[in-house]
Length: 160
Image (cartoon, rainbow, N blue to C red):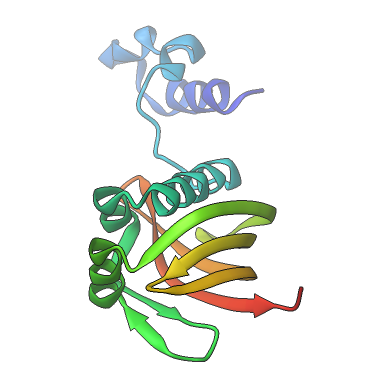
């Protein structure tokens, strides 16, 4: 029995037949009703993909939407960067990406909280300094208003 069939059966049993409106409810009709957006690993994986694309192309508007207003990022050396500082860096173009290769990804949803871990090989420049490093990022996501936002992140440099 599908969720829609169960829901229709429950409504039919709980609704007095004298109202008459229950006759229009069927599992087929319920499939087209708006159901609550339940956070899933697939939707979180899609959000991570969207974030990585925005990061790669420096899409300021998309990054601003995906990053929660209270997000904080812990850098490899332990520094804490808030959203304002991170967005200012993106706007200034401080990081010029040459390539971003995704080496691995793990996505989890635990009781509505999303966690992603992504290993990236990044070639870039920061000002005049070249960067060629493998980094592991972990991000904590909040599912709110039918979308995922990043509320915390951490990046570590891995040995090559």
